[in-house]
Image 1: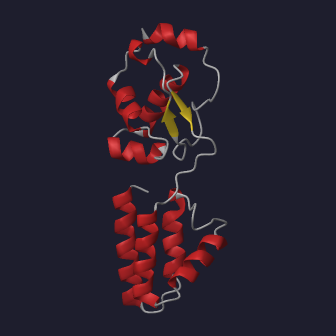
Image 2 (image 1 turned 45 degrees about the vertical axis):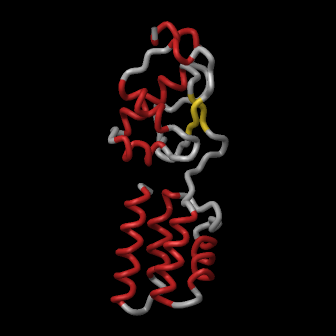
Image 3 (image 1 turned 90 degrees about the vertical axis):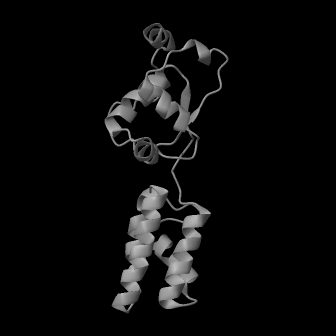
Length: 169
């Protein structure tokens, strides 16, 4: 049934057959005929994870799927018009991550932490409110250079690397 639907979908729209797709965010499309399509296990796994917020890289890690498998499954779902990219979608860090960043940096350098975070984000050409998840390690590295004491710098980096891994950024 999938093959027939592929031909009917026309294959128009987004091409994800090559290039870096890790930062793309998709959402499911509500269709009345969705139950008529048969999914293989990878398509179903990917389809269930797509929420319009998580990037394909985060989903790949969380679902335990290789990026090549995610690409193939997403391509099939796109052709079936069961998913669509979120307009200008960039996966951004959440409030919990920013709170942890401020807390950890404040422990290392004091009350100037929020200002330094904003400056570092701006230096990277980003805003604190929409900071891309893929650049979180870069932000942590930049901020760690502001910490003079080696022990505090190490503690800051350790705490933030743990948080980045926990979040799947």
